[in-house]
Amino acid sequence: MKNAFPVLVVLAAILALWYAAVAPMNIRTALDQAERAGAAVEPAGARERLEVSVWRLMIDNPDHVSEGYALDRPRLPTPVQVGEELWKTTGEMVLKGRALSKRSLIYHAGITLQSTLWGFLLGTTLGILGAVAIVHSRVMDMSVMPWAIISQTIPIVALAPMIIVLSSQLGIEGRGVPKAIISAYLCYFPVLVGMVKGLRAPTASQLDLLRTYNASQRETFFKLRLPASLPYLFTSLKIGIASALVGTIVGELPTGAISGLGARILIGDQFGTPLAIWAALLAAAILAGALVTLLDVLQRVTLKRMGMQT
Image: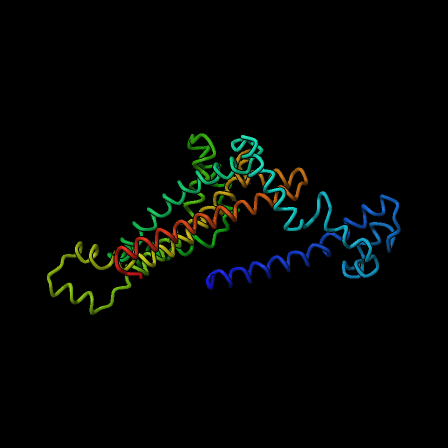
């Protein structure tokens, strides 16, 4: 309970700020609808209200502030509205036996998760191999690491269309492979950096001790460097899996995909349904939290079996 209390406090603060932001974000839309319904608002006319701050509009029209919390298409929905939309597209679908319907976020989360896991696997593999090469080769350290850092300065929103076009030119069919590549691109760097830090974690005295036992480089790696790197690796994997999910969602946006959480966000934006966008965003956050929690459990079990965590 002690561990949960700080999380609950932060969650309560986020919800409080969210509710407080709903009124100023939605007041213009609420006044527009009230005016069309024949109610008197101050000032009259949507164009005139654009020149007035939202705070002034709320002060001059206190009776219409609450209407901003019940709009069908709000600029900022309330947490309750988002929760209802999420339930309608997940739990309610399950109860109706339509969990894999294309209107279900469970189906779209599965599509996104598939590319995320493939990208995570690819990015993690390349990151670990790159870290091993960097630690054991000064040439690799001086050449690969700077380029890995430079690669992270390229905006993923600019790189994603290039990867998609290039994949198409190479004859790669489908959208899964480009999304996995984009996902791996974001996952690769945190795993590389964390693994390099972990492999270099052993102290000079520990390395000297193994040399006195005439341990080979291979034995030093598997008996000292690799075990010492695991706490760093798991921390990097948690960052990497979240980055991989973001990469997959970003990769779904420019592909014209009709499946996946990114596609739901894009479709919601095109059809002007903010609740669909927010429900997809919340589903992505829940999916990321579940993946990170799974890795955290795996970390605890692994380190405990190795005697590195009580």
